[in-house]
Amino acid sequence: MSDVIREKCKLLRLAYIADLYEKVPFENPEQYLMDLLQQEIELREIAKGERLIKKAKFMNEKELEDYQWGDHIHFPSNLDRDGLESLSFIKRKENVILSGAPGTGKSHLATALGRKACRNGYEVRFYRVADLIELLEKSWEEGRYQALRNRFTKVDMIILDEMGYVPFSKDGAELLFQLISDWYEQKSLIITSNLEFSQWNKIFVDARLTAALVDRVIHHAHILSFTGDSYRVKYALSNS
Image (cartoon, rainbow, N blue to C red; front, side, top):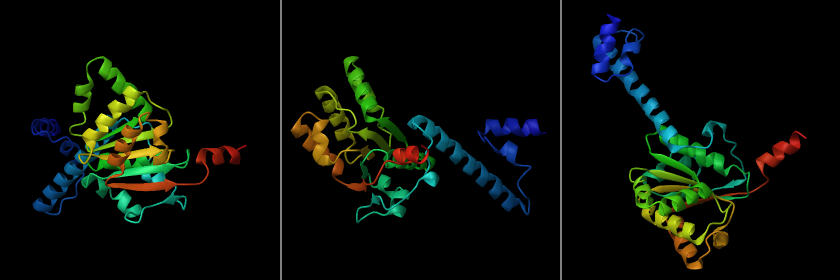
């Protein structure tokens, strides 16, 4: 009988009910059916979240539950921790900028927010900026730049990690500018950077392009400042 049920569930594309139907407590038919279907829905949502996490291509598995909040993180007046963790900025197509010294938790927080967004059903992509620039330049040389731009059509949020760690070529900067212009007021961005905006001209060789890029990035943006010493340095010193 279980094989017959499993086959019918497969026909109806019910992925989990064949494994659940004997485990759900029965009080009455309506309660049983509701609980069974609810568990099917919940397991589908979990599986979808894991698929979205895989597509996002995060560099690690950092989660909000592991994040060390502290006084070194300075929030803007219009956003607090609860507001950030609610991810409401994604619905409003707003940006989040995490700016400060290396090793202060910016990438961890960006990744953790991205993974939560995936579990909430959002399409997310994660890039180290240097890797994205390399990808953009290669796609341009091979005549695939437009196809690459089109890959972001259904994406809700893009995480650009380590803006400012590596300077770009003029061509790379222009290609990234075009991409960010595509996303302006259409997607949410999370950007981590060790540079203040006034220093972005160090990585974008054209001053006018830098000004135009910063203007797009900070419009509708929440800027969090990170101060203090590197976690990695403190950990290394404490174990030396």
